[in-house]
Length: 382
Image 1: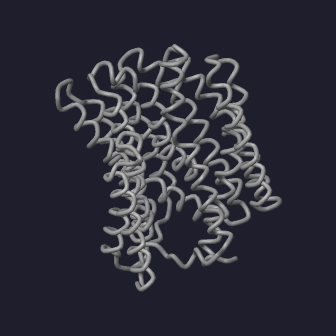
Image 2: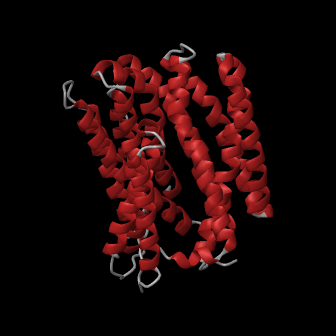
């Protein structure tokens, strides 16, 4: 029941990314947003998520993961309702950007705390399969987002935000019924460290996000990127001197943990943009309906869901390395072949390559995450 509760809560945040992407053309048309304005609506969520993610994980340690899951769920669902209530006037863009950012804050609280609950509930020898179910079924539920989004958008795009309400209610009820124990740490919150990492992550991610609009030769782009990285460097030096740091950087002494983190970083660079690009590409370049665009994304997530289960079994039997190697190869081949087919402008000719690309991410995500969590829990064992 605890696993089901966490999957519902996290699936809500994943569904929101795909479902909003499906509705993007309708949002732009009804509210009169520019392409850059809609990009800000998408990016505000990801920017806030990146900036507050480390803080969310630390609050789960200090307050207990169950409490933080419930708090994050409430922040997320209230923000979703307000996004759906955006006024159809000149305030539409700032309204959406602000409440998409608070959605990102809710997700940043929710996701690491939910992962902590799953880790606490399952022993190490069963953790690989549990996290494979966590990521795989969450991915499968995410795949329903585009189909649901296509159907809801035909009624009103505002419903793509309101649909989070029943999912949140189910997640909260299951969390209460599961009676998850909260293990709290009686330690102070590193407020200075939190401010540094929020500022550093926010600036650097903003610079990369806006590079396409500002240009790589823009002083603003490099001011944000370089300034953010400089703040993160200060954060690292500060954390190493703290008795109770926000992030225990000692885990990076483990080469395996560092490799897991880097693999996840590069996998996410391929994974996250798929949500927005594929839905807009299908509707604009392929002249697909919202439901057809949903099917286009569904191919990717079908491969992801199946491969994540296989990857979890490989992890439990043979360790993370075979699954990561397989995932990197399958993902690279899948994305390369998919990219080569994009200019053919044929929806049906692309589905095997989209599924192959999704399978590559599926092989990577659960094994790398599980191995990283295990090593962090063991104090960064090599």
